[in-house]
Length: 232
Image (cartoon, rainbow, N blue to C red; front, side, top):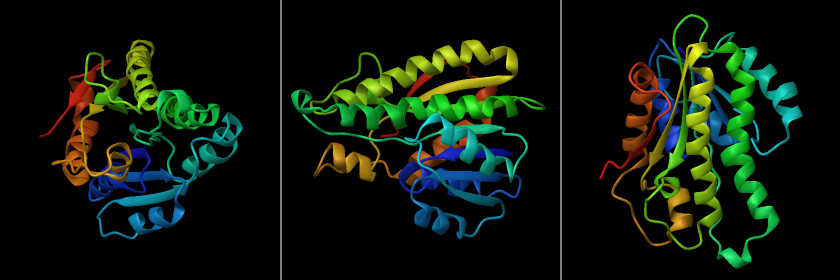
């Protein structure tokens, strides 16, 4: 399978790309703004192929079309799975949030998903059922407990959940399933930024196993679903 995953240089994205790249059947396009960590990922042992692409999802639409698209299509001519995992978090009291904070969070967490999905959808669902997985957060799941300081992050992830439902409706006739995984607490750099001093019982490698398995098989059972995932 040809798989594209964003936010692949650390945490859940890194571990998911590593797992998927272990199969000889898979070519994994790993995207992140951190080229050095991507190169480390690509050097890990695996039967599949991991191709690192350094790209900042917070850049404008022209860069997606002129730079990212060209780099991806140099290696694959179709995409079976797109995992929109990249995320950005600001932990700041509501009254102190600046325009720059909002722009950075939404550029990565929401607009990045829209732009890369628009870029790759023409190359998905041609032969087999394709799958787009948008990584959300339990903090953006309706009715879940919310936390002070994370208003913009949670709002962006709530938007990702609704976006996923709308995308699924539009692309069901294109042989593309779209789902959102609203992940619970996982021990990552982002969690430490959100909750300094707290240690989650779930490791990134544990959640990556769930994400990878769902990416490969979930499209046959789910479409347009926002699924809360708490492994502990």
